[in-house]
Amino acid sequence: MSETKQPGKATLLEIYRIATLIKTADDRFIALIKAGQIASPYYSPRGQELIPAAISVSLTPADYVVTTYRGIHDQLAKGIPLKPFVAELFGRATGTCKGKGGPMHVTHVASGLPVTTGIVGAGLPIANGLAWASQLKGTDQVTVVNFGDGASNIGAFHEALNLAAVWKLPVIFVCQNNGYAEHTKYEYGTGAATIADRGLAYGIPGVEVDGNDAVAMWQAASTAIARARAGDGPTLLEANTFRFRGHLMGDDSHYIAKEEMAAAIAADPLPRFRAWLIEQGHATDGQLSDIEATNVAAFEEAVEFGLASPYPDVSELDKDVVAEGVQA
Image (spheres, rainbow, N blue to C red):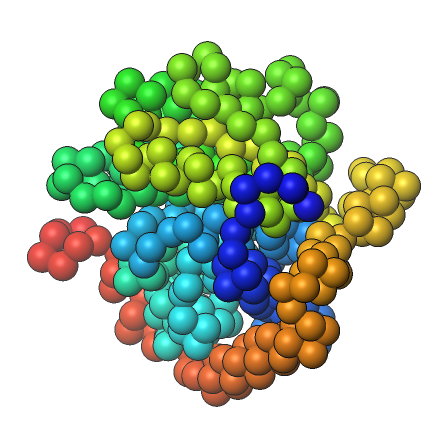
């Protein structure tokens, strides 16, 4: 863990709570799909939990987060209520989008989560729009947009960074670089040594950080968020991490060398962070076990709610497609 500027005990424990909630959710969703209790596409964030957990503790409820189809960790970190969140992933009428969005399009505006997109790179210009709105309104809201390393090669990435730099938008671009763009290893598809280097081309800070180090991630994120909130413009963060469970459910990760996968799993950031919290005297084993148990109980309650909820009625099929009063 980093030895410089560190968050306080309460912040560290909140990061741990969020990160372990994400792992709880991921484990449970996979078990439910395997058991045939739900049928859904699913993109696991396992291994990347600390990134949004460490970012979210510096955000306010009014701030925005934009994410992509591998986004349950970002969604949970932003504070989306568990019951409607789980119901949405189950495709139930009580979900945040009435069961119509599913895991690739979870939205909950009240929590500051206005967009989850299934299109690679599409979230960046949307994030600029949200940040511009905040700037025009004169609020101190910031927008965080999450994306993978593959999205950094999409035209929208470059256009978004350039516009954000020109207009000094209060936006933080967070590349969760797990080393693989779907099935393509980083060096096979990206010419830049680091994605953070690309910030230089647009005159904005580009910061490379160990996304599996909770404190280092908090340091980088809190600095970028404070900078944006102060009106000093955008930052590009490259959070290096690893994806433990393939591109999507059913992917056996055969394209990843067994040694590389084994090394990543051996360095699992969650048990490492847990051990560090105890070692540094921030918490006892019992206190952390209580956090974990509370997460499991809350999530199981949400699962029961989701499974007991009805599916959307067929009459809902053509609703919420266009704004009310607009002719389709």
